Amino acid sequence: MTSIDDLSALDLAALVASRVCHDIISPVGAITNGLEVLDEENAEDMKEFAMDLIRKSARQASAKLQFARLAFGAAGSAGAEIDLGDAHSVAAGFLANEKADLDWQVPRLLMPKNRVKLLLNLILLANQCVPRGGLITVTMSGEAANPRFELKVTGSTTKVPAVVLDLTAGHDPERIDAHTVQPVYTVLLARDSGMDLEVVKQEDGVSITASSKE
Image (cartoon, rainbow, N blue to C red):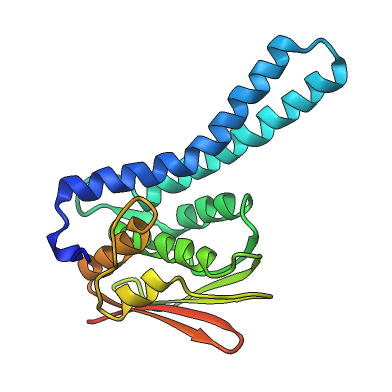
């Protein structure tokens, strides 16, 4: 069992980088496969298939990279603020390639970057709770300086990964690797943002909240 408090900055950076690479490799690999088909095939129908694959995969890779830039990247200098409208755009683009739909009910305003990063990472947590697809409804109450994020997750099948339950209950995960680092990163963002994080499995879905301690 690994304590998240013992995780070094270098290890965290390496694990997050591995997570981002894992998300991007599939569409990039599909682009490579499409280009190989164009090089090897003369049939027009196969070329059209390859071009469709390349277009779709390029859009997916772009959406994932734009999302990762805000959710994991520096996104400006220390103390910078991010427009929640930009967060909406990248979240919608990311989920367009996933099974879950997004209902974004958050006002457009500027907010400290780590809180915006936290909100985007909460969307990633929510997406893990609907493996067969569903709806993620995102709302915010309070002011920018004292917000409360609420995500309601509904679908035919909803569940909360064990690592998420452990972390939000204050327990250390069995292991921290590229597959589990995103929930760890979310908890660290919540700490840095001065927000309490709660994930609850309910009869009709999953509730995820982050509330300012101020």
